[in-house]
Image 1 (cartoon, rainbow, N blue to C red):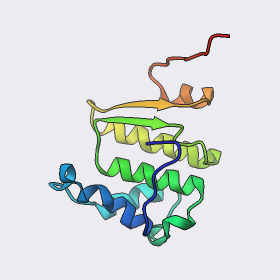
Image 2: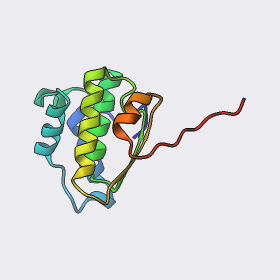
Image 3: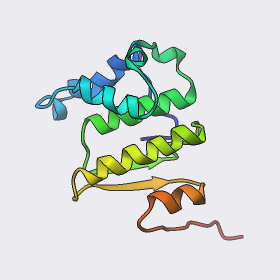
Length: 134
């Protein structure tokens, strides 16, 4: 999931359903109730699904992209600053949601990129710090 997620024309629900039109995910289907449960965990209601993607804030786009990626149940999550445009409460919600997703299957993993050391203390089992030589 990129820091600035891809948004496609239509509404949030259209964007959440989009991966299931791809050949690799056609054997599974979009679980609307699961998406609603995850959205509720992030303080969003069913009305969020009808929001046009062109009207989403940066944080709302990140929430939509996270729900979209979790919907396809990947073995590895690659998250680049997934909470950069979110307030602290929403950021903590994302942290809990990702932890719950990972806890559902012991063979799942996550690479979480962040500049927020406190967040990394909360979400990381291991840390790698990259520095540019001066």
